[in-house]
Length: 313
Length: 240
Image (tube, rainbow over all chains, first blue to last red; front, side, top):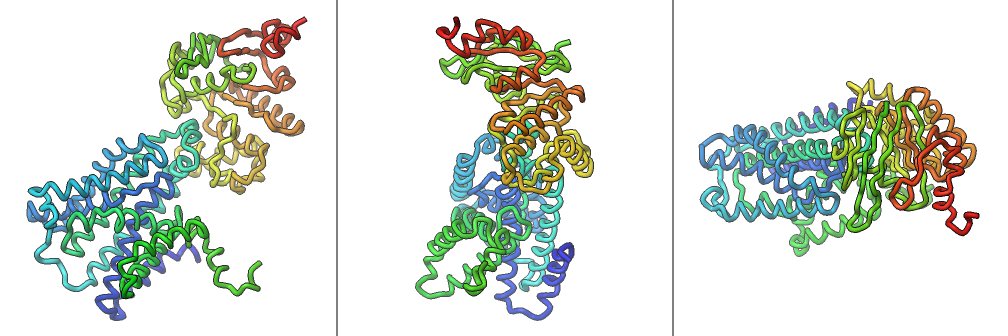
């Protein structure tokens, strides 16, 4: 039964648009699936390999800008830009890994935090190349309807899910987790920790970047504060996985579901709307204290919270 | 032939000499005991052999090949595996997954790695605990897990860092038996141990370190009556 869960959810999501959802709901669904992809990408590095990154906006933005700049300078369709971003992301992830992965734990997290900011400032200031704060606008988006975007991101998400599952169940997955649990012990067991951390980062960065390139296509407009922000992308990425369940297959999707809906609900409330980051912060504190493994990891505990008091063991 | 040659190895931490010109050989197939008072540099020597520290001076050769300044994973690949004094299981993995992760070093695919892991778990008697998450294993079993994990990398040489510390007598006897079985497989063993009864009974030869220097080397019998060794352990006034 459990074996068919991914397939049945995929099929369900395939037929979902056929029932005639409003444009707004479709938009939310697209964002939700996109965030699942970003979360799954982050999870490979931060969840399984234990290298917590606070700078995944760097990869997201890089994907978006690769597609955007190819469109802007060379007139390529941003969909070709999405494909072209793959090698770009692989190479840049490798370079970033080469530099940042010499650091461990909190130092790695700080380095990635800086990385996202460095790229944002760079994109803002290389005005001739990136248009700076004016941003990049795709004059004519491919479709007005959301349906095709929905199916494309759904396909990307399904591919990502499958890829992550394959990787985690293979030798690489064992090595990633071994590195997370104890890097020195892993090294002494013959695991080339630098190499496997770099592999993990390359996969993670590339997946996140694909979501970024998709975002360029979908929104039709990017600027540095939209795709490279610390709060709205980097921190939310960490939250999506933390809320959903670190190092679980479904965690990122669950987290994306919670976070996207929560963001929409909070933003629609008058007066509190502007304080959504504060509320997210409070939520994060609660999650860390009460559900350290996220909803996906601690779902039994989570379910118990909603049972009447007497029913608790 | 000597499997491992340690030649004039020194290790300085700032101005502190943890090891000074240590040289000795470990012969193929033997069990070599490494003893010395606390802070004598035993674990530091393991860390140099295993590649965690580059030596400040001197070289280490394994099967005639220079291994000092290689990385730990490269040295492990060449055939030296180690255990840690403070056990370091991969906590949130099951016992079996711990061993599979290290078996991947020589296995082609997951099926082979799993098979090798199960075989090693049977060998050390942890088979029944294979599905237990390793952080909930008791100390004795964690120590065994360390050993199993090291064995799963198919080493030619095993470095055991205080595998007996904290074990009760029956666990100790069990472990001694396993170590004899490991040796019977043709694996050379270098073992750090504080427990004198154990080290005297399992070692073919013993090397004694004190303040980072080798002060004696020989069979358990000669070591037990060596005045320098007695002095290092008991202090001079007890000498007479």
